Image (cartoon, rainbow, N blue to C red):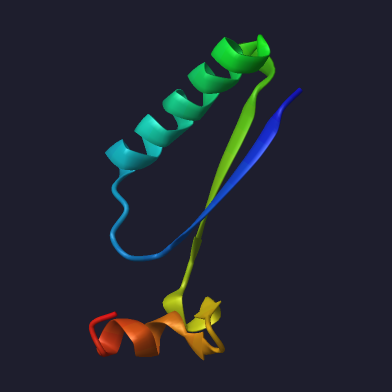
Amino acid sequence: MPYVNIKVTREGVTAEQKSELIEGVTALLQKVLNKNPATTVVVIDEIDTDNWGIAGEQVTLRRNRGE
């Protein structure tokens, strides 16, 4: 049973985009690894940008600077 955890910053990912990710990852695992879609688990975690760091600083600060 494959378990895939996708982590994204909480910046407006729509329900439709999440659905497409879940469907796409499931299909990819079936195609590449011959995994059963019925037992494939995909979890999407949305992380506040204050709780995500890159290069030693919060993503919120980087976004505020336009990075």
